[in-house]
Length: 375
Image 1 (cartoon, rainbow, N blue to C red):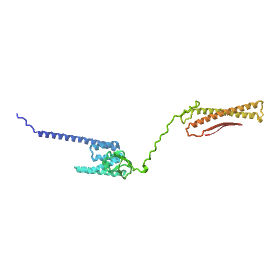
Image 2: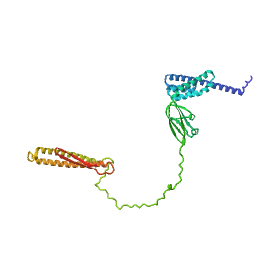
Image 3: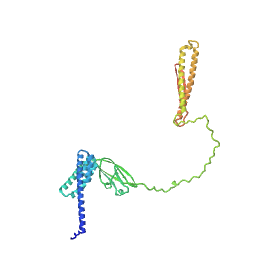
Image 4: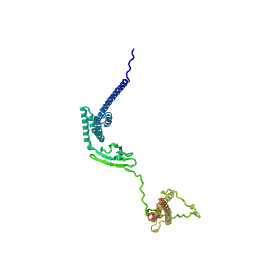
């Protein structure tokens, strides 16, 4: 029995490489087929949502389609979805990207149908730009290359960072007020606002200024700037203890512990007593008037109808007048003390001491209390 001849080593290696290549190609073809099927399914779902006016659902699905298979048709559909949703700036940027990529894709096309399809998509994108362009403005933010290269340089438009490759290039921007901020390490942050109007082009130049890090140069001294000679040192006289301490406060003196701005309690007590005394004085004033009226009726022409009536009226008269005076005086003093307490609690600048007086009076068929004073 003859032994089986051995195959060369190169033949075995070539066979393995060919098998690996075929397997990889088959896997790639299968993955491509799966991606195409997924992209087609998402595109149909997005189209249904778009036709129903549900742009919040349609646009994200179109974005996934573009990520899987970024053809011009999918990108044009995404731009139209952005426009329908109101994001005209995003839509214009998508249309511009389609027009920019069209020449390269047309050159790579292998059939006349593919070339015509690229031209058609580019023309549709240009038509959309023509329709939307009048509703927005254009803004260019210019920054020198040296400043862009600064450490920590950041350029923001409405709070969003602007990529370095977009700086210095015109960009679509919605009408309204927009905020621009530029900052870098060691430089003063520059903030600008620009009011953009539709159909207008705006150019903004940004130039950062370095922070002040050096001290101002010292001016040469002049005779007027020379410091004055020091004054001769003098010693303060030694303090000596006083020969005697001041006498202590009298035990009868009281300290008002009421909080500043509040009327002390003693003022309220005095005022209450004064008000009660005034009421009592007013009562005796009324009795005084009643006695005068009764005497005038019973003793016309100073001749009383019955013996001893004149003495009785005179006694009542004098008693009521005396009580009216006593209670009126007490009331005047109490009210005066109350007013003094209120004024002293104000904490105002020193002023003349207030004076207040109350004088009860009575006449034929009339009586009252006269209040007078200075404040």
